[in-house]
Image (tube, rainbow, N blue to C red; front, side, top):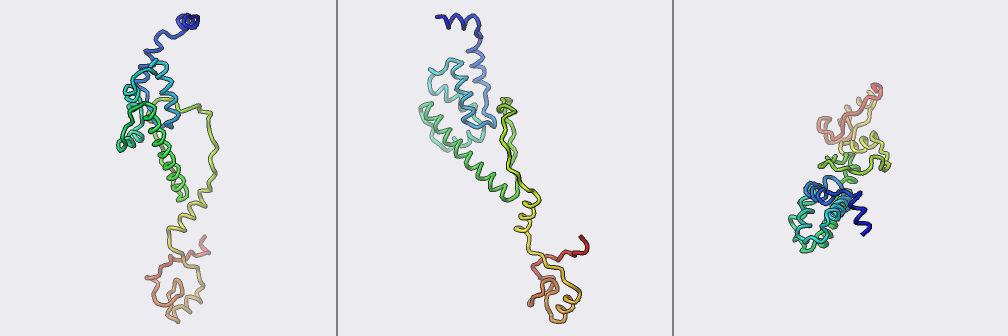
Length: 196
């Protein structure tokens, strides 16, 4: 009784209405599903909707999900209960996160940067002071390694005497091997060390 009087005196009289309005507009955006779910379920509690029918809670949650997670649900049967629906969403979200991490790791090893994600809502994404240090990557070395893997080998610079010897022997001027001429050589032209 005392808590009810305190709530009446100091509480927000429109608390339930505000929570219901928030349920109508809340969106997951680019937030992690588990983080979003905490906010969503807190809003359900504030709207005094925990006793609502599971179909209603599932409907609010379904419309608040981001496109990526919603697309995952298309190929799955929807559970009847709200709790089972949330469990299904957690599993799908966790699998998507594993795939995203794997793709980001693979792209980093290829020298590509992960796709930037756009914020799909105006909801805050955590404290701006929350951060984790990033791994230092030597971009120049990474680019050199990628270039080495994607380009054919390059010939080594040789003296004029060596070129003369290759001409006399009927060898490829670029690599010094038999069986082909410079225009058919698989090696890239050599860099002149005097011009660097």
